[in-house]
Image (cartoon, rainbow, N blue to C red; front, side, top):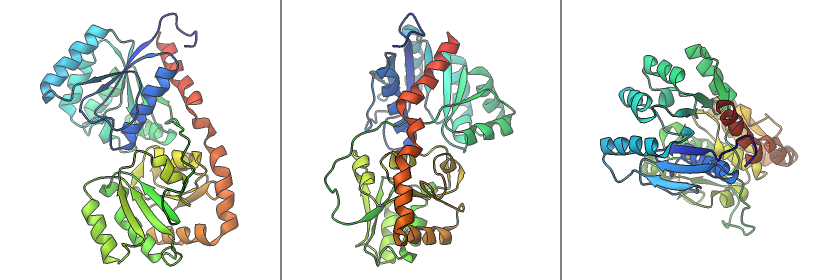
Length: 356
């Protein structure tokens, strides 16, 4: 532990689950990052869903009914005397968030994280509750400068810290994981990721005829619709829905490039991971997120937001122009060095230092 504190800090990091989405993966990597610098971390989940790695003492309230779990959580937090709580939940229900602020998290310095430009997912749609959250919590940490700016504009609040997601680097396997060349998309199979439109753009590109496949990793309620879309285009031989993969790094590291087609992002972990592996990215320049990671025509391509015809053209460019593609590939790793966990953890430690 660094010598900014005489006693070991004790931090509760709370989320609904450690499974499925990008937010939950960041929840897990944050527990590991803080645990690795000597903080006593308690990883608290409100549902019994654990797929991602984490560190510290796991405390699960998933087996209890909704209201009992919150009473038990309050009792646990009061008993353990945490220095800080870091909250990684989606916050949608205004009444429930009032309870968290005034009862569950009472008298503990609480840090709320905001991971998307869709602020109502983290501050509720109720403006009064949103303002109350921004006033009452110890700190609000936004994942990107764009998200911070949106909060400042909407709520006239300038006391927002920015701490990007950190890289939890794992060395990928050297062996080929699939027997064909491919591009890759990763995320929950939900409408906001727009994988159905990606499939359509891919079908119009020259990639299928060049035998460069499309691999999509993730699970979700759109799975059946995507399978039908693939069948409609008669592309079952070259588009693959492979579900959830624990070793996502292995799949990304062998791809030609990553594609991101979300309607919006806060700070895309999958883009960060791809670039850290030397894999360039083609992404929509959607609200706030990708432009803080992708330097257009340097480590990837930013496509006019929601322009799927342009997306098709850019997919072709990355395959047709090998010199341009290799230049972006060569720049990828260096472009994300500042997101190494050794850099990001110091920003968290500074917040703790300022509060002691």
